[in-house]
Length: 256
Image (cartoon, rainbow, N blue to C red):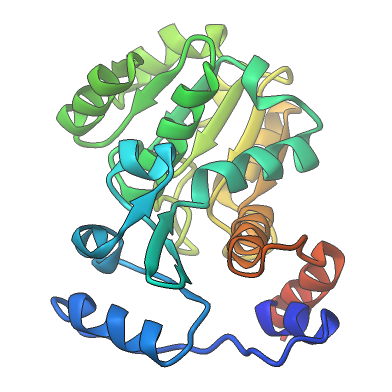
């Protein structure tokens, strides 16, 4: 989708995949900068390992302690994390609500994407933010840092909390495998809940199937993939991304 966007904009740059072994990002970054790269996306473990080599980062990335996008601007190396802003765009588009107004529960808040999303919703001033993770201590530590509430991943805790929740976000890996169960069973969902599942394997995730059975509206993580990528491109180029072109390329790649 990035190369489709670059072609549509008449740019000569191309997006490519590079393998940088763990522990070598400090050597790779200045080489990429010297080679004329506009920037890079980063995966684990580089999202945190790159931090000492940045000359600047935005408030979200600084609070999160991880970046997934780096831009080279002259002598400067600037880091951002587009997962949080990307999911705000995705939810607004797919579920037709303002995320800032939603009482939100985030599943899998201890992982990288979950932390990014939880931090974004905290910066947004989300009312009644609740964090949940398989390892309760991870959710509790993050909740204390963000001024949110952590609950155990249990049926009792979900039964108590979900009546006060508008938006449920699954940032866990549950649903990545074909035979995974839904991270929340249908008995705890109602038709007033809004569901956003960051998983995008297949046409419908287990959580989406549970949402459908409860009459709730839902969306999966394809739109997050689209919007976080568009935000990265805009950061590198300093101009709006051709979102429709990127969407078409992404959907075509998924079909193939």
